[in-house]
Image (cartoon, rainbow, N blue to C red; front, side):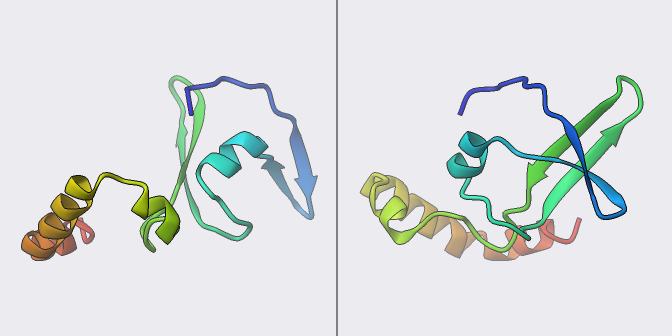
Length: 93
């Protein structure tokens, strides 16, 4: 999905305010209701950045994975096996 700037309306949900996500974005990243996201607020320049939280694992299906080149899948398996401890340490930074 290419970068896209879009105007969205702020809506009221209970006592909170919310911004809806574009269906194409939701579909592209296989986002689900109640899935956690990271929100970054910056004052200068004023921005709100929303990033999906994929820490619970990839949102890829087995079918998606099988479409990847075999050489790449093998490299990923080897990398995860060999660098497991380093990756685990990085999650605690």
